Image (tube, rainbow over all chains, first blue to last red; front, side, top):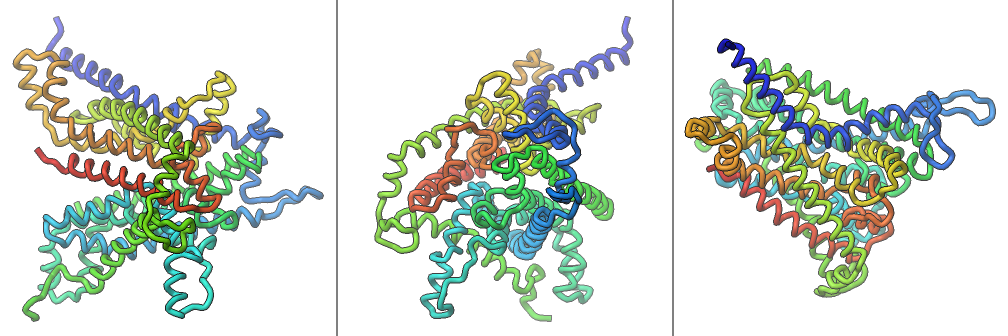
Length: 306
Length: 266
């Protein structure tokens, strides 16, 4: 006869097994059409490019060398691949500036939303959610129409006589920046708002009672308390910005490439799949570093505020 | 101290917030207005007209791409919602068990990787399978969309489940309901708003995808967003504004529905 303990254990084992069976389809689909192929990319980055795209199954570290270095066609010496380094630096710079811009704009917006009355808060949340779920391509296209030479900004400035010729914004880094800040702004506002909503304003009141200035209250009370939201928002903006494809393709034209365009090039005209794979893994590594920094930071602030 | 000292006030914040909301909506409004422009250039106003909607409607490429988007979106949304519901049932309302953290990580993995990397990975993987099996249909797009929709569908379903305790299910079991019957009569009806929210989210996410579709699609498999991307790169006509406007309207409708379904607390 089984003891009660043994029965309980058997029931628990069965429960865990059932739970694995239940989650199996989701895990399987994600493994087959998302996670698994990433491993293939890693393998491909160590192979030799085929003559018409794809690869030859021959080990080669060339692709990884080519991420940052260039081999001279005549004497085989290596030098820094200026074009790649420029694109890496540009992508990182644009993503960082986008993150800062959305933070500067998004923080006050989230604060404004969180300090409305319960009823109107839902309306503001709704207004920020709409662009969030609206097609990114359409929103980028909307920005394109605003900033191009015949767009509304240039037309108004020309009519007012402030400028005599249209300012060329489209197909510059500024255009990519404006576009990314525009499309990723809701991604910054939403998590900050989520932490801000839980903010206990009695703490703010206590601060004022102790003669804190408005800025001191903001810096010493509000900001530390909503920091997890700020970090989450920054990560949510930085990661897609770094891998942004649509915005630089539409607003940057062909010249101002970002990492994703460089990767696409290797799979198209470049016909260098291993290099494209190595570049993809490099992007992943930068993202992982950012995520790790986030996890560490989130852990820390979690301890501090209980 | 001043009489009307508001503890919630911060100088300039309201102005920045107002600017943000205006800036968020202004380009979209301009885009919609120019969809009704009679002139064939997108830079001047030639009077009100519906002709661009008509021309989009008669453009077989647009209609094909739209139908394909809906087809992929609905299959992927239904599949991902079913799988996400099962996964949510398996990962909530339980004491931690071995593999639970792994499951969370695995389900959310598509959110952690930039789309371009997933796109490239699927391009490589599926091109191999295409050579191997000779099949080059729409199935690849459906598989890819289902995978990246799962974490989105999972989100509201899991949130809903976590707010439901097991009391009712236990009561059902006490009254001799089989597990399946308890699920169908108790769990499922209570979970329904979450499932519906997940379904809509998944559909919108699938409908919006550009990057992964762009890399996975074979020739002649344009969805509406990839078709639009191709057109925008080639130069713009108000027809794109008209398509965008119709697309926007649909998204707004779904999001509004989603907002009410997921906010409903009963």
